[in-house]
Image (cartoon, rainbow, N blue to C red; front, top):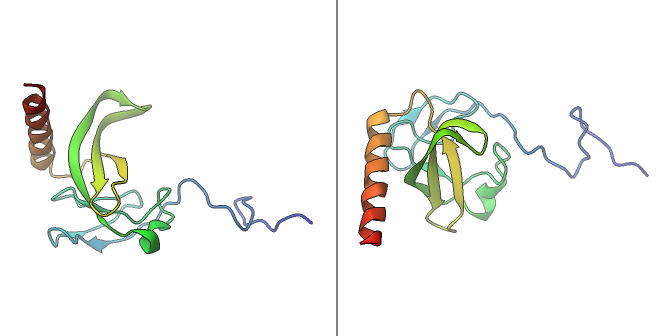
Amino acid sequence: MMPTRDPNGLANNQTKKFQRRKEDFVCEHCGTEVKGTGYTNHCTKCLWSKHVDVNPGDRAAIETCGGMMKPVRVEGNSSVKGVEGYMIVHVCEKCGHERRNRVEKNDDFDVVIALAKAAALKQAQKSS
């Protein structure tokens, strides 16, 4: 018997790797009201995120984790894994999961720069 399929051609027990969800939210770290674009996955003011997805947009980690994800460093140059620009690296404070998220045009770039400087200083202190 063939599995039933949704309009995207996925079997009833499969999920797409990316599911766009346009959702507004209030940052649980700083309280900023964030307007979602469908790709928004972190606060535009403090850069913190929440561990809600296994694959972007699926919300599968809400029940299993739901921890706050701390921005720990900035990576990037002309291309990171085929994505142009800079990436914020988040680490879940509850389970340790690490995820990279693109720096968006409406992110507070002063906070992005401060994060990059702090991470570079921490790395330099480790090296010495």
